[in-house]
Amino acid sequence: MLLALASVASAGTWGLEHSLAVTWFPQGLRYTFGAQYQVPAGWSNPESVLFEPAMFGAGPYVELTPAYARAGAKVHFVPIAVLDISAEALASGYFGTFSGVTDFDNPDSDFSEAAFETDAVMARKNAGIGFRYGVTPTLQAKVSKFILAMPQEFTRFTMIVPEGATGDYWYEPQYDALMKWDDTLMVNSGLAFWAFREKTDEDSRMFWAGLRFDHQYVFGTGDRQLKLGPMVVFKPAKSSAVPVCVFFVQAWLQSPIHEVAPPYLAGAAIW
Image 1 (spheres, rainbow, N blue to C red):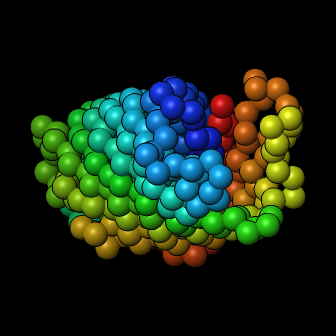
Image 2: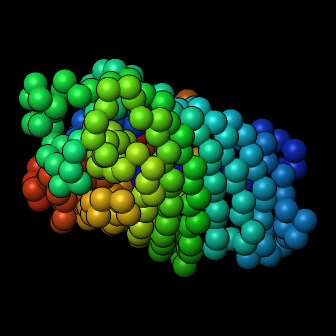
C-alpha cells in the first residue's frame, strides 16, 4: 500500500486525485483516479490542532492495470487529526491476460513469476469477476519534523469462480498473494519520516525521507509477507502540474516465493 497525501477541503467541495504507480519484483503498473465530495465535520474547529481537519468525504474510485480493472466507491472520515479512516466497495474485472484469474490446488503452491511461465500454470488462467470490500484505519501523528503513520488495512475478497477452475485457491496480482475464493487479507504498515522540507501555502515543494514496514497476511492460506526499507516522498517544483513523487525499496524479510533480494521496488506520481 502507498502513502496517501490528502488535504482537507472546505465545505461542499470536490477533490480529485490521480496516481500512476510502477512496481518491480514483482512487476506491475497501476493508474488510479478518485473523486471525493468533502465536508467538514460538525465538530471541526480551525483553531484546534486536534479537530481542525475533522471531515467526511465520499465519491467514486477507478483503478486500471494491464491485469485487472476496479470501479466502485470510497468513503473517507477524519474524526480527529490523529485518526484517518477510509472504506471501499469495489467490483473487479480480471482480464484473461498476464496472470488473469489463475487457480491453484494447494495453499502452498508455487505462484512465483517463474511458475507463471510454465504451461501447466498458464493453462489454468481465466478472465474473472469479483468484489472487494475493505476498511483502512490509520493512526498518524506529527511532532516537529517527525511524521508517523500506521495504516491497518482489512480487505474481503469475494470471487465468482471462473468456469473450468478446479482449484480452491487463486492468485491475486495486486497483493502478490495466494488466497481462497472468499478470503480476507490484512496489511499492517508503519511509515516513519523526517520532514527535511515541508510545503507551505506559498511553496508546495517538499521532501520527506524515512522507513516503511509492511506485514501482509492472508487468513485463508496463511500466506505471510514482511517487507522493510527506505522511502522518500517529495515534490520538486511549485507548479501544480508537477506531482508528488513517492519511491521506496524494501527487502523481503519473509515471503513464500521471494528471497531477500532482489528487493521490492515501487514508485508513484500523485496529482
